[in-house]
Amino acid sequence: MDTRKDAVFAYQAVYRYLSELIETANGPGELKLPSLRQLAQRLSVSVSTTKYAYSLLEDEGRIYARPKLGYFTRSMPAPLPNDQSSNLLDTAFVNARQPGMLALCSDAPAMLASLQNPLLMMERELTRQYPGAAVPHYQSLGEPELRATLAERYTRSTQSYWQAEHVYIGADLQSVLALSLQALSLQGTLALVESPCSWAILRQLQAAQIRVIEMPLDEDGRFDLPALNALLKAEPIRLAVLSSTVNIPQGNLMPAQDKQKICHWLAERDIWLFENDTYGELCFEPEPARYRDFADPEKLLVLSTFDKIIGAEAPYGYVLCRQHGQQFHRLFIERGFRLSPTRQKAIARLFHSRRIDQHLQTLRALLEERMQRMKALLEEHGKGQWQVVVPQGGASFWLKTTHPVDMRRVFERLLAQRIVIIPGEVFSQQGYWKHHLRLSYTLEWNKDIAQALKQLAQAIGEAR
Image (tube, rainbow, N blue to C red; front, side, top):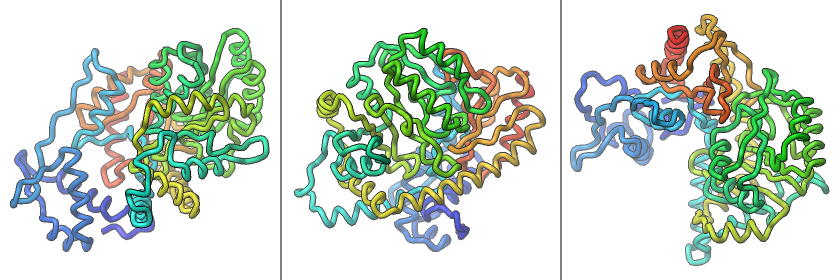
């Protein structure tokens, strides 16, 4: 078993071992896998650990159980085609989940170090402390302790403060963003977004019939400020959606003075600022400036999620907003999210115990170390096919090809080789970034990443 300091939890190591075993198996037929007890003895772990790893593989459709006979592998399906009628992003994500695919497009920082085990342990402890009859099945606005914890965490001063009543928790980021747009009566209006922009944000704005104006970021992660000011004067923009620290997926950090100017212009024109704090804690620079440090607190909404730092067991999204409380209350109650109050309380306890702050230090260090490892591989195997800009946070590189390339053709070539990338065009509604791609460094590093990058460089060269 892997005993390095950055080793993953035991079940993840067992999962990784089994994945390699499945992928290196010879022959097209099924492979019988070791029994739970055999594998536990082989890897010196508990039977419950091996059982959980098997259940993950079973959920992914990579293996199946035969009663009294054990676990067997399934034959690997061929990559799904990317026909012109299908959505590029959906095709990428569906294929990334297929067995045997190497996803260079993953967006899961907590893959490197998650808090799922401490979260579940805390949840079990709380379940013993609070019998089911004493806990409501769900709270429509979110669990009170977690709402109060988030309000406390985001409070910075007598001007920049939050109360529990300003915090709303939902099933995921997309859900809380959709309800926020509705609560503030912003459907059908005009929005300004940084570009490249999160595909999840773009999709939700489109669903709300909001017309989007994209403001491209330069290679340093900055706007053309005179052009931005002129745009704000010329267009009836009602909201702006901007990343709190590092621009995602680009990975650069806008200077504090730029953010201060932008917030001043937004306040002058009574424009709502939606600060996307999804990656706000994953900046490599200590104490980076955030838009909310300069924004009008009465026209500010902060949105984020827990899964980027805790893991998939904490998918909830949340927003903080000081205005229009009645509309938020009504819409969240009508929506009626059925979220586990015990798990939300467990998340709150991780914050209170400072466990999340300690974890964030470890996670940022791991992300920076993997970023440097990926940077070295990109420089070694790029063969002049791309420009490498070192990100200042987050979990991915934003690569630009040195020559114009049809990135869809690159995507299709790599898909046939069981490698999945995300072309840059999915981060724009207006046709930008066709010669870019997002490349993650939160990967399954036990696989041959160097070979995959060689294949990427070759596919780009052939697509020219």
